[in-house]
Image 1 (tube, chains in turn red, brown):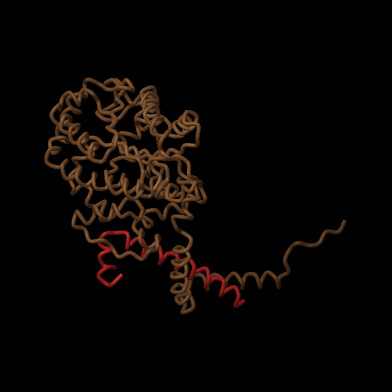
Image 2 (cartoon, helix red, strand yellow):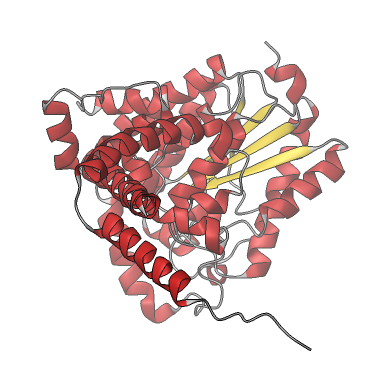
Length: 42
Length: 372
């Protein structure tokens, strides 16, 4: 049964990880977002 | 005949239900493992994207995959420029650079390539690098993608409108470039406009994250298939209508009223860029005056005379031929739908044929002229 739960957690992490990456890219793609990223050193 | 009973036993059914419940709990409930997994997977996906989403890889796929919509010309141009940058065929190459003015003057660039190949007796590749409102420095940035020493002709198509756009109009496109290209010439133009260059990582995916983030939707193209670029936006629209004359005349006068003030800066910058392309890419450059509604030209004689003189002077300084194909193509006022777009198929075919006639003599000597 543990394997089923781990599979669920893995899919959750994959979806959230991809979402997090897309969100960061989306924010970085805006003018204000890019300025904020540059301000903190990126 | 005795068939095995497919109905699960109560024991199996109960295990499946428990398994599904455990899966659902793992999928939906917050957990430390899920948080750690998310924080590990995001950078791993980023790393994977940095390694796999590169110009060299993108150049191998259909350019339509990089278009966020059928009208996304800048995604398309980026993909075509990547193909150009990876082109090691050694074939003669013609780069058609211009705004919607040139885009709507060409019937079919593939037909043009076939006609040029047949007449030149060698394989000729034509890159259609046209897009609505393309600036002159985006044109040169696209030409910059051509590999050094390739036997290439760049047909840079400009008109008074291209050269009199207020720098503020394009400033936002320098800050957030519409093209996902590494370009010294774009950087140069940004520096001229006083825009600080962003930090570069030397990784395409990171350096062009604003271009990428605007095209996340392109992932769907890998399921639905590549987008098909729109062509001939004006065919089928009513031909030049004398009733619209006042509107177009006012529009043209408003646009051209700034010409004398803004054009000198644009010409100086374009000349530098073309000089760089001739020196570092060794390509043959042609300055082409895009077709304009003759009535508008007659209505603004001073502006067009000034433009002609400035283009002729620059052509002479950089040693480039200057073309105006309107007469050779036999274009008349009725061939236009507005003041700078052709709207009739036969006019586009005539223009394309006139362009081919001019390109053939240049193609005959292109290897000698572009050799280092």
